Image 1 (cartoon, rainbow, N blue to C red):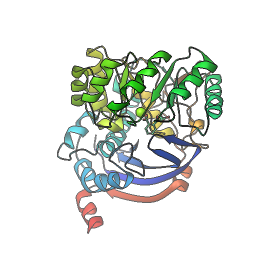
Image 2: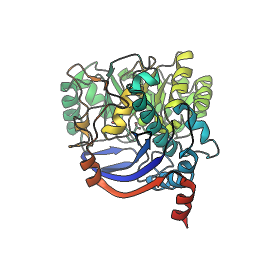
Image 3: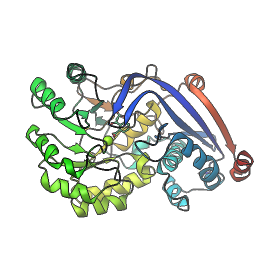
Image 4: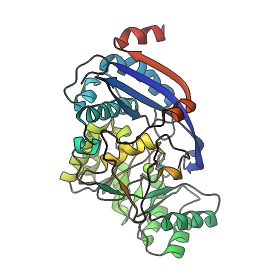
Length: 380
Ligand code: OSB
Ligand code: MG
C-alpha cells in the first residue's frame, strides 16, 4: 500500500444541540478530515482533536502542524505492507496520538478499500451490529435532563450516560433513577473531581451505576486506584488511558474495572486492537467512546466496535443527534432495539457527500508525494 497524496481539511459543522461537559460547552464541531489516496483508491480519517486543549492537550492547530510537518513526510511514498505498520513508522514523533490516529485510520480505510473488504473484517471484528448508548451533556435543569433521557430511551438506546461535575451529580442521578427506574445508567465526570471528593463520590454507590467514568485527573492512575478501593461502583478510565502500556499499569494498580477505547486517544486502530486484546486477557470489558464525530469518524468507530471484547454499549449514537445533515448519506441510524448496523461496503462503507464536505471546509492543504519538501515550503 502506497500513499501518494494526503489532503487535510479543517471542517466546521454546526451541532444540532450544544454539548456541555465538566470542561465547557460547544455549539459547533471543528475537526480535521484526512484523505489519503493510493493506487486509485481513497481513504478517510477523522481527527478527534478539538478547538481547545480541554479534553486532551491536542487541538486542531497542533494536529494540523504535526500531520503536515511530521507525519505526512513519513507516510507519503512509503510502501506499507499493512496499515499496522503506520503507527510504528511514527515512533520518532512523541505524543500527538490524535494526529497520528487520523492518518493511520485513513490508511486502514484505504487498505480495506483496496482489498474490497469492510473495515470491520480487516480489523478482526466478529459482529454485524453493535450496541449503542448515548452520552447526555450537562443540562440547564433537572427537568431538561429528564426530558432528554426520556427521548433517548424512546429512541431505543441501550444505556444512558450522563455527564456530571461538582454541583451537577447526585441530584441529577437521583432524578434519572426516580423517573426511569433500573435503566442501564452510568456517569462521566471528565476529570472534574479530586480524591478529596471520595466521600461525596461514594454516595453514588447507592444508585447502582454501571460505572463512573474518569472521576479524577486526566493523567492520573494512583488516585483512581485509591478511589476504586473506596467505591463499589466500577471506575472506567477514559482520559488517563493514552496507550496500552498505561492501561497495563492501571489494571495492575486496580485503578479501573472497565476501559473506554477511543482510537484517537491511543494513536489509531493498531494500538486500539492491542489495548482491546490486553483488556480481554485481564478480564476487563471495554466499550467504544465517542468524540462527537461526524458520520465519517462515527462509521470508523462502528467497525472497531465489532471486536469481541466490546461487550458494553458504546458512545456511538445516530448521526441525527449531532449533525443534520451529516457528511455521509445515508446517515448512521440506530434501530429500535438500540443497535447500529455495521456498513458492509469496502472500507468504512459509508458514502461521503463531497459537496457537503466542500461547503463545510474552512482550510485545505494538499500534500502530494515527497511531502517533506512541500511541508518545508509551507513552514518556510
Ligand atoms: O469524555 O467521552 C467523553 C465528547 C467529547 C469529548 C469527550 C467525551 C465526549 C462524549 C460524547 O462523552 C460522546 C459522543 O456522543 O460522541
Ligand atoms: Mg469520557
